[in-house]
Image 1 (cartoon, rainbow, N blue to C red):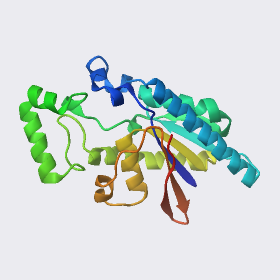
Image 2 (image 1 turned 90 degrees about the horizontal axis):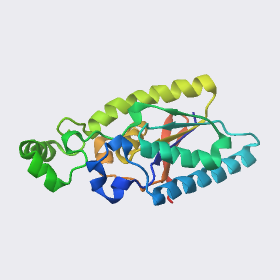
Image 3 (image 1 turned 180 degrees about the vertical axis):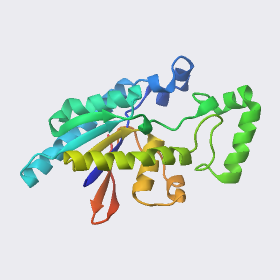
Image 4 (image 1 turned 45 degrees about the vertical axis):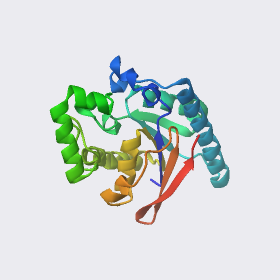
Length: 224
């Protein structure tokens, strides 16, 4: 496996209006029209990118797409496949790639968290202040550290799948926190590295490339 492309889903309805969570669970949140367009533009970028790779190397790159099973990531993957499906051997889904679980606070504004769950809110704020955001778990939810532990399993899955099927390039369509944590893990960076990074833009593509025995960060090579 030579390259990993981390893609954050396109703009979702909840990115625009948190009230979407009042009627729908997180996994059922859809893309906005802008988000669908971002997904397709990202697909067009990949089509150009892999076509150039094909022209330079003289053969078709073997690409696998992995996606989170949330609706917004499925829709983003569909937009990508619409324009560069000829380069992608197949797409697969894994629940380990979902977003951080926000537990009781899922879909709530900070004001609502304080009003509805005052004790839990105070406990979380204490944990956040004492331990920092990488270690602090949401009530009945996850911390970024928890996301790190579960997504670490995907490294083995990616490697075994790539070795078995001769895959050199993988696209991972996931979520902001999830892609940041996975990048940190592949690059063998510290938790401070994660804490100092911002969430990527919707539909953006971050490239990690294998050099000898280590992964190197090539940064965001596409932002719609």
